[in-house]
Length: 129
View 1 (tube, one colour):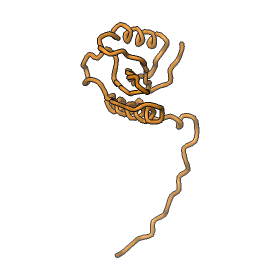
View 2 (view 1 turned 90 degrees about the vertical axis):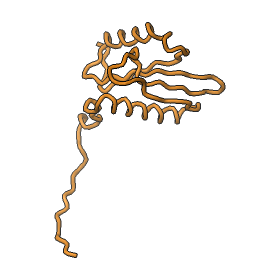
View 3 (view 1 turned 180 degrees about the vertical axis):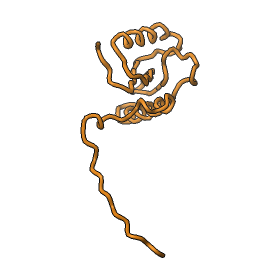
View 4 (view 1 turned 30 degrees about the vertical axis):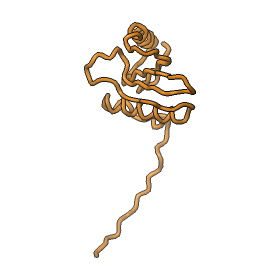
């Protein structure tokens, strides 16, 4: 076997605040939803309670009243239902937040279960402005 000598180049870790964030905005929407779903599963495993179900909702273009991920877990003898809306956007302001929560509240009864928690996942930093 003939081997040739190769120069090994050592690269240092990236430096700077800009490198501290994952490029979530580069993910496809469905990939970002699945990524968020895995984060949710990880968080729920750490907390008390048994996960009954965690799933993404609907397909692209389907009306789902803003909700993208649904979870059902048991905490003691109580069922806890949560909805998550996934936003892969460049800017999410206070007015976006208000309209997102308003839409959730307007359609809350359509889920036919008592939704205990509502969360919003963002690909970018949120602003109160």
